[in-house]
Image 1 (spheres, rainbow, N blue to C red):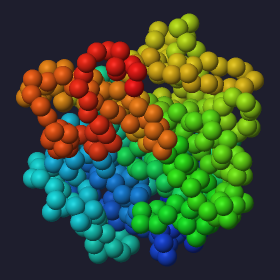
Image 2 (spheres, one colour; image 1 turned 60 degrees about the vertical axis):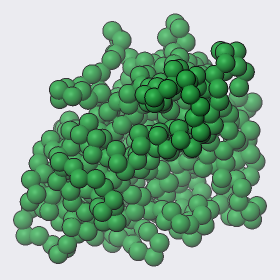
Image 3 (cartoon, helix red, strand yellow; image 1 turned 180 degrees about the horizontal axis):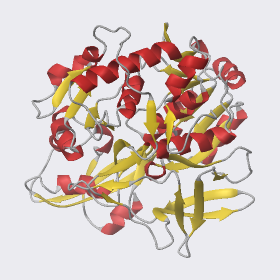
Length: 467
C-alpha cells in the first residue's frame, strides 16, 4: 500500500474495497462479507455512532464477540477517532458497570442477548442490532482515514500490582505491529486467518490488523464447533494459538491432524510459557509452529521463531519496529514503534514507566543469543499465566482478605497439563469456610479463570513452596 502519506492512511478495508471489492474480508460459517460489504457496513455504523454523539476521543465500551459484526465495530470507531474499550468476557456481568466507569467509557455496545442481563449503568447502551438497522449506502461521507497518533484501544491488563491496569494503544501501535509481523510471516490475498483469540486481548486485535492490511480473509469462529473442524471446513491457513489451545488441538484424530498439517502455513504460538514436550509433539505431527514472545504493552508480537532450533525452545528474534535487550540483572527490556502509549490514569493522563534509555521493563527474565534468539527464563514478580490469561496473585489475595474471618491468604500457581498453571489458595482464618462459600464470594469480583481451583489451610511457608 504505497499511498500512505505522513501520519495518516486510508483504512485498509476501504482501500481493498476499491481495489478488489468482491474479495472476502470476513467469513463466518456459511455467511460471507466482501471488502466492499464491510466498507459499506463500517460507513453505516460510523453514521449511527456519530448520530448518538460518538466523536473524537469518546471512550466506547464493547462487549466483544468473535463473530459479526464486532471486527467492523472496532474499525468504525477507529475511523471516528474514538477509543475502543473491549471488556474481558470472563468478567462477572455484575462488575461491568464498574469496569466501564474505570475505563471512563460514556457508551457501551453489546450483543442483543446480553442487554437484559446487564445491571443499570450511567453509560449510553446500544445493542449491536441497532448499529445495523436500516443498513443502506449513505449519501453523507465520513472520510475512511486513520490517524497513527490517535488513541485506538484501552485494554485491561495485569500489572505488577493487585489492581489491573488499563493499557492505551494508538492506531500507529497496531499498524506497526501488523506491518512488522507481515514482513516475515507473509500473508497473501488467498490466505485465511482464524480469529481464534478474543478481541479483548491484544493478540486478537492484532489478527484483524494483519489480515486487513494484507487484504486476506478473517475467519470468524463459531464457538460451538471444534477448532479442528473449523480449520478444515473454512480452509484456514494461519492460526494464533496459546499452549492450551494447541494441547486441545493435538487431542484430535491423527487423520484430522494430518489434514491440518498440510493445510496450515503458520501457527503463531504464544501467550504463555510453552512446554517443550508440547512444542515437540506439534512439530512431530507436521504443524508449522512459530513460537512467539509478546505482551500487551508492545502491541502483541515482539519476537518470533521461524526456523526450529533444537534442543532448546527459542522464541526467535525481534520483528521490525521492535528492539529487545537484556539488562545486567537479566531482565528483558523492549522498545520501538509498537510500544504502547502508557497506562491510563483516572485524571486522563498516561503513565509510561521507562528507563533513561527509553526501555520498557517487562519483568520477564531471559537471555538472548544473536544466533539462537530469545529465551524466557521466568518472572521477576509473582505473575503467572493460566490458559493464556495473566493472573496476579496479589489481586486474588486482596479480595479474599475482605471476607469476614480471613486473617491471611496466599495464592500459589500449580502446574496444569492443559492450562499451564492454575491458582490454589492457602488461607488462615478465624472460622471454617466451605469451598463453595469462598467460590461464590469470589464470583462477584473475579473472572472464572482467577478463582482458585482448591482451598487449603495455611500452616507454614514450607507447605506453600512444596506444592
